[in-house]
Image 1 (cartoon, helix red, strand yellow):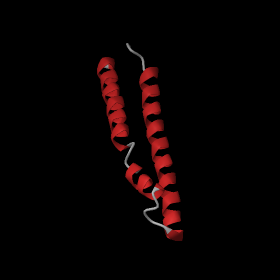
Image 2: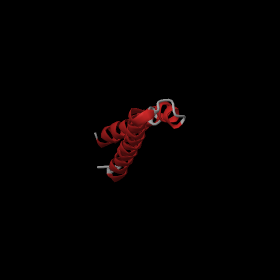
Image 3: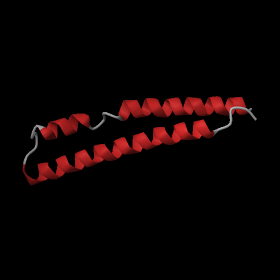
Length: 80
């Protein structure tokens, strides 16, 4: 049963990594547009600041999820 649990954990880690890879760039188009002054003025400035903060937060959460999953897999016993 331990081998099945470990294989399930390994599959979960791989899925977490794939999801992280898929979503890493989710806010990149918006950030690039804001860097090119697509939306100007006070509201544009606030939005640009917020979208960049959201991108940093998203990437930090994705990094933490992958790191945590890898740590849990590494700390699980290979055999009973």
